[in-house]
Length: 154
Image 1 (tube, rainbow, N blue to C red):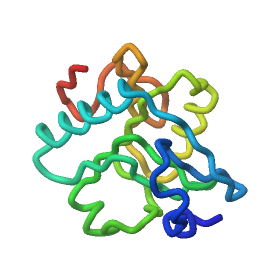
Image 2 (cartoon, rainbow, N blue to C red; image 1 turned 180 degrees about the vertical axis):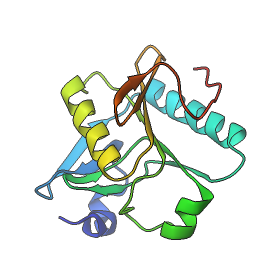
Image 3 (tube, one colour; image 1 turned 30 degrees about the vertical axis):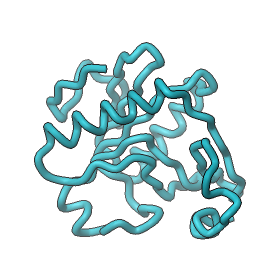
Image 4 (cartoon, one colour; image 1 turned 90 degrees about the horizontal axis):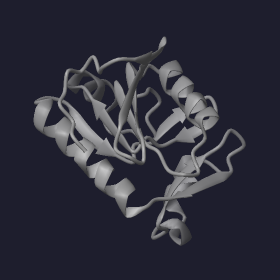
């Protein structure tokens, strides 16, 4: 499938799952807990309230070399939006992508997703653990703190 076919498929509209496409056009679904949703909203609110410009998106679709991936939260600068608008999926990755981890996520899966995001131009990825800890990464690996200089409490 293509991402536009997924969006047009009426049978997929109300699923309580996050949907992505793998490199073969197959749908991959992940169920989300209420805690997952809480963290997603908390991170999004912190980004929106502290970064006065740009756009904060939830469930932002990004076309990667391994299919369409969907960070839970993303921040796009004004320049990014000026260049890409709200194309769906984005052909370039927003500057900041956040993944809220679920029990089913493996480190190998997250390492691959981060590599795909960085390959498409992401500057920083945050991984939020089930305990609410945030781990920060740039294209070189894990870093001690975010370069975005934000205060995010979960």
